[in-house]
Image 1 (cartoon, rainbow, N blue to C red):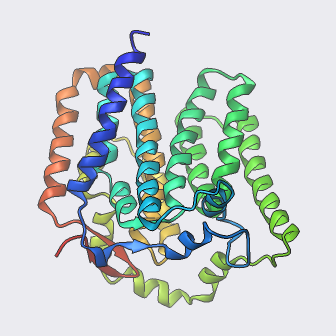
Image 2 (image 1 turned 90 degrees about the vertical axis):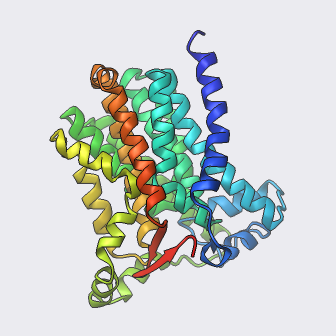
Image 3 (image 1 turned 90 degrees about the horizontal axis):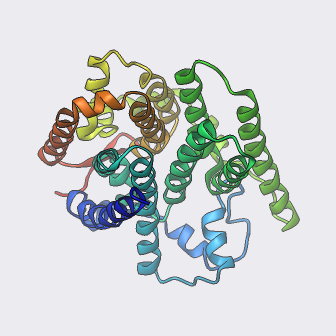
Length: 348
């Protein structure tokens, strides 16, 4: 109880820090924002050929709940979803490790480009993807500490919903989390991996069957988009501003990547590299990368606090100074994201 009340207060405080801080840091002109109007209108209809079987959960759930949101209410809902995703991490880190760890991860999330994208790309499955990614991180840690079936059942539910929300994106995120977990623990948890893989596969099969039951012809437009574009086009897109694309993946958090290198902790390069390779074959460069990569980085911070807590306690001022430096860099450099080789500045 001594930990719960302060952690709840910390989480409550970060609701306002996320809401107001993101508005200040990632304020953008209207024309640079990307609104998924198609998904919004899908919230008003039953499943149809306009839905995609690999990412139907968000609009379909709102339709079944009879939400009937206005565009402003829908945009506000998207904001609250990503804020809740960050609060999950703040609360869990705070209750698991201590309030300083909760504060640290909260500000690390706020300064990460994943929040920039959540603010600029409105109405995409990414909002729920962030939520399900955060929940998966916490459940993987709980399963490490407590192997009761309850946690496995909860994980299966999260994986099922995450796969229905955005199957390919979420599957890669979960793969990176399992990979990082296995490398860190120097062993592959075969039963856990089988549960994860089986649940994701079952989710995909069930979604296809649901669409067939509704009389909708199954089409996999995401894979055909990748294969229909020649390799030369992908190379052209990714070589226009590669240095700015790399910076957009990190923003001020580049200082924490440097800190990992300084301490010879190179595990972070594995999810970074895999996420970069996948991103190479997409148009939405910054958006895709940050959603694939940052859950793995959040998990690595969890392992750091779990296994190297004395290190954090001894150098707490250094880590918070790095947060301040990250903020300074973020404010110093105009905020932007890369899309199809183009630079999109949040403000003129």
